[in-house]
Length: 292
Image 1 (spheres, helix red, strand yellow):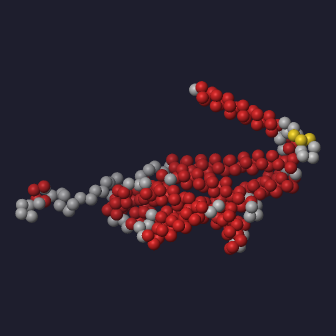
Image 2 (cartoon, one colour):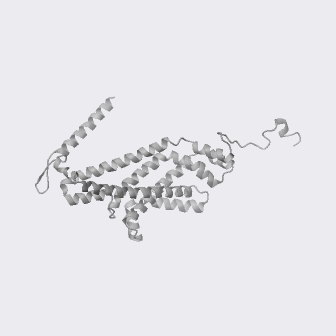
Image 3 (cartoon, helix red, strand yellow):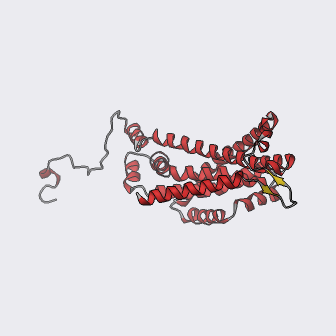
């Protein structure tokens, strides 16, 4: 309790110092006096509807890039997870080398590479780099989730007549995805924030929109635009995390596996499939007659 009180007091003191510092007047390098950052004269620009329209367009551009990159990253992640867990070395080893290479390349460098080499344009350069990089991370998470499952899950799928590929898709992969959902969501949040790197390649996403507005209206509104852009990013990330938690709460563990098993063996109730010897249902004295 003492540690909590001391910690809360330290945080409160830090926030108080930050607010006082931001609210105080400051002097520029040229000697001009500027009001504090919370002065109304620094926020009157937001009475203009055109400013909000421009910020809204930048937000939509960010969401457009993040949405397409997220879908492609999930697809690439699934493909990487299957390649990494393949039984054939000819598939597993090249996939591992490619995945480690993509994980080690910075996202910004990948954006510049795609833009300069393939001339895809700023939007697709950002989407491609974000999808490939985050797909590699998600692929490793899914691989870990698949390998963490008990071996009996795969054996049960094969026992009820599913092919190895069907077992992977219908039994192993849904459970691995559910287990790794927090990691996947965290990576999608990183993907959403990394769309700001497209500012370097010239894409007019939210951060570049804020910088353009700052350049147009002057440094007087620099903090104001910074605060608005930060608030929008936080709201988007919190909304994404909330949606992911809702999805996780609506997918109880094991439901998909039980439904697949019932469909495969043609029954309507939960059934445990146990592989028994052919003569297991015969009396013990008839299983191994004397002399056999």
